[in-house]
Amino acid sequence: GLVGLGGAGFPTDVKLQPKDPVDTLLINASECEVWLTSDTQEMLNCSDDIIRGIKAVLQYTGIPKCIIGIENNKPECIDLLCKKTQGDSTIEVKPLPSVYGTGAELILIEKCLGREVPHGGLPADAGAIVMNVTSVSTLGKFLKTGVPLTTKRVTVEGDAIAKPQNIEVPIGTLYRDVIEACG
Image 1 (cartoon, helix red, strand yellow):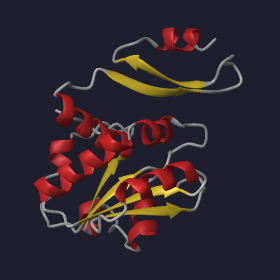
Image 2: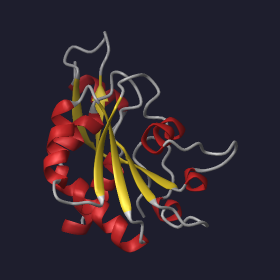
Image 3: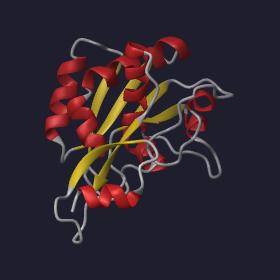
């Protein structure tokens, strides 16, 4: 099955079956680190897949609304997703301050919903399910094509890299090969 692609790899089917009811699907479209841009590329290149995935999650879970939280230093992503969701009252695009830490689940819930997750609790304890934007996009792609996840977009960045970039690689590609491809 699908696991979260934001970094933790948590099983999506477990996440989408919380013990208590939730009222908001929160899409984490804030990069967790300053130099990462793979989620940004996902928004720019796969916006239809993102919307398809969101609508499927809302439909099959019965969650009434979705908020896509995007840092305000990505105006092209905000504009694109606002256009894609125009007229859909169930999906809101919410610009967020561009400060380190915004992509952390607990901070994202506070910034988007004004709620606090209880100490030791889960997002569902604050009435939300949080999904990474690439995770929901991958779900949208699978629903359209039936093809499972076989590649992953990664950001290759830093002073030691000749050509910093986002590169899509087959799952299982060695780090060494990715770094060599970027110089």
